[in-house]
Length: 158
Image (tube, rainbow, N blue to C red; front, side, top):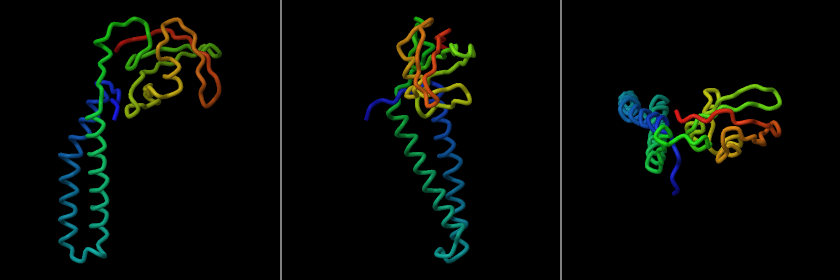
C-alpha cells in the first residue's frame, strides 16, 4: 500500500481518537456487554446485541485508524522553505476572478478534509488544480458548479 500524506495536526487528531477509543470507549463497551450478560437470555437481550454492535464498530474504527497511521507520511510544512509554490500542507489564499471574493484553504490529507473549516483534500478538484502553481498564477478549476477562475494571492507554510 502506498503512503498516505497527512499533516502533523491530522496525525495528532487520529492518535487522540485512537487513544480515546482504546482507553475510554472499549472499556465502556466491555462493561456494557458484561452488564447485559447478567440480565439473562442473550437471544432476546437487546442491550447485549446493541453493545456487541457498538463493539464491532469500535474495533473496526481502531483497525482503520491503526492502518492509516501505519501508512501515513507525516508532512510538517512549517519545516519546508516557502518558495511560493503550492504543495501539500500549505495554506493558500485565492481570489475568485469573477466575484473578487477571497477564500483561504489548507491542503490536507483525505481524512483531514473539512471544507467548513477551510481544509480541502489534496485529491479535491481545487487542490489538484493548485498543486505545483505559484503565487500570482491564475488557475482554472473545474468544480461541480462549473469552471472557476482563481488567482493565487498568497501561499503560507503555517
